[in-house]
Length: 308
Image 1: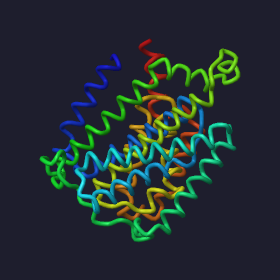
Image 2: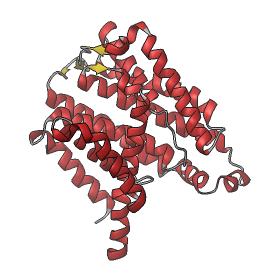
Image 3: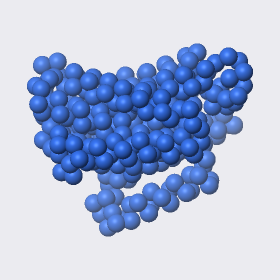
């Protein structure tokens, strides 16, 4: 089966899914899938492990939420400005962090993310620990009522498809090929004349902006922006989603986000809710030890081995 046929099948499933499953749950899944895809652009295609991507998710959410509550903007404009704000923050943080590698890069991004967390904790417009509640969804383009969950779902699906297309286009462009070269052998990329820090910085900024897009959309879905979105736990969750689905695969983060979000949704309310983080940790360990390519990566290996 060609990959374009896989995309068509998945799109058809996504179009009919809200008639069989709760639309808000599906919208949440798509938001986190976009977040994981944005993170995978850095880890899977540049080879940089960021522990601070929650800062961009939360920034997009807070800016969009504040604009929707105080400016009377339509949702698409509020989301656009939230995305731009997250991208601008990513551009600043990228300049400070891409000159570092490995664990040093990860620690710099974590430190900067914690700085953002404490700023939002103290800032008056965020609501502190209570969060920004009651964010109105508004009317898309002044016409489509997003308070209807079905309308909201299809809007989120359109946002996700745009973000997914942008990532797909990026990694299959000449720019993306340079990113892969940096990941595989950075000294060789330098010897070929590429300014690797500039390439890393642009990739970091794109990744941050798309994470902000996910956060902005998530705020409208739940009508809430909270400190959970900027906490370092969220940065850890997106790492888990990407590793479970398959680092460096285009569909891996989507599958990983689906697995983790589904577990959180259906296990948190039952008897296993108290052990949810233990279960997630166990899955992480199993993936690292036995399925290092993730679900999609292992599936691709089996497919190539059996069907060429």
